[in-house]
Amino acid sequence: MAEIATETGIEIKNLSFGYTKERLFSDLDLTLRGGNIYGLLGKNGAGKTSLLKLICGLRFPDAGACSVLGWEPQARPATLLEDIYFLPEEFHTPPISAELYRQIYAPFYPRFSEEGFREYLQEFDLPPKKRLSELSYGQKKKFLLAFGLSTRCRLVLLDEPTNGLDIPSKSQFRKLLARAGEEDRIILISTHQVRDMENLIDPIIILDEGKIIFQQPMYEVTRCLHVEVQMEQPSGDGVLYSEKALGGYVVVRKNESGEETQLDLETLFNTVITNRDRIGELFVPEETSTGGAA
Amino acid sequence: MNKFSIRRLGLLLRRDFSAGYKSVFIAMAAVGGFVILVSVVSAFGRELGPVHKQMYFPLLFIGGYIVTSLTFKELHLNGQSVLYLTLPGSSLEKYLSKLVVTSAGYAFGSLFFYTAVSSAAEGINRLIFGYGHPFFNPFERFTLIAIAVYLVTQAVFLVGSVYFRKLAFIKTNLYLWLFGIVVVILVAVTGWFIFRDYAVGSRIDLEPYFQRLGDSGQLQAILGPMAEKFWQVGKGLFWGVMAPVCWVISYLRLRETEV
Image 1 (cartoon, chains in turn orange, blue):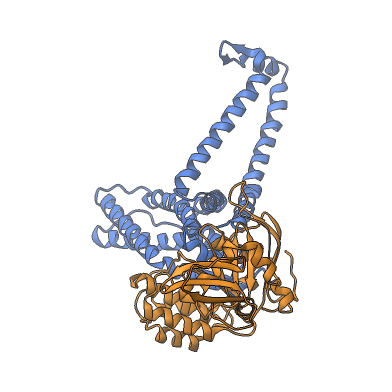
Image 2 (cartoon, chains in turn red, blue):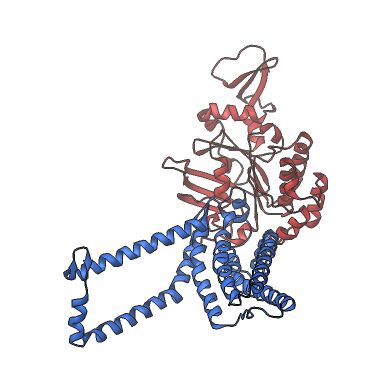
């Protein structure tokens, strides 16, 4: 059991992992620091859920090093688990009330906030006395989110958290999560629903073909990329990405003017995926550009 | 690294109890009702044999093995396995919480429960008929030996519970049968090689061998200590090795479980 007591974030070095002989990740590197709500984006089958499972010790790497809050997650030490909350896409809620769930599970988390839990339940409009098994999928998910945020764990892993949530719940979710960000807390959200995460997740991590191909804070994205809508179909070397949209074409170029424009996550994702090499040249690796903190 | 904490072990036990107490109470009611019914009906028919001994042992062994086989069920179910494995508790604590409940917990719980239910049944018999079966004695030597045997053998079903995703009880039994068959084949093949000179067709006739040894008085001298040695080794393996080996295997398997 490797204990790296000084570490407070997540350090993954040269990690290899696969379900079959074909590697899902090979030599994957990733560094995450407290105080951020990271968004993990990737195509279907890119390995987003597997990465979350590796981080919380539900899957074991074939090679490489993975340190989470100073611990090796593979050993699943209780001290680490007290600091991790993982909400998977497929979850289980026992047939007991929210209140009984709190009584049984909250004592496992030493920093659990009873007050916070009550507030979250109220904000999500969840009945504390009703059996969890009788709630709808979205309500169950909101309950588990409320519980997870109340644990005050330093690492919160959310896999597709807005799937199944109704429109008001999505905005409640964004509000709550924005508030839940603490200085030493890492929130890592894996999602396809990028529109739900707009203005919430930052930095952005993009996983593709077994590697992290992009990890940048939004201010770097704004500094390096320029987006505009133009009537004519764009052409020329300067165009990194373009797509037809209402009223013309959305065009992404290198930001040479220094003007700040708002690039939505979907366009950013498509730009990165279709221009891996050019994007790699444009952006300085995050560790260097931010001095180790995102 | 804080691998073991009594507090967390207690929390895990409380969690398991709250998840399963309803099923336990339903099972207790069903078994209690059955025991009282059988006891009253057999007393009515004046069959006054040791009926409680006969009913307690299946409850202890079959019931205990089934409960043990189901104990790690959540480890093999989507969603539930994530909740269980990410629950703050070390693998050792999680393992011990299951072991304590299914071994000593079940053995002594069932003993206490059966003593109470059979006493109630015999009270009813004596009230209705004025007579009844002998009372169940939980401290009888044979009962205590049965409990000790259960504590050793249930460890095998604990291994099955951790390993098999579905039908752990049936699969463990099948593997035990397979194991038994393999042992019989091995013994037969070894015997064949040792005594093949005494083969008569497909059968081994050891009569001449025993006669030769008996005649010279060597039979007792050779077989006696050998049999005693085998018995001692077998007893040692059963009481001292089998359960700890199964505990280690199932603990390691739990630690290595991935989702």
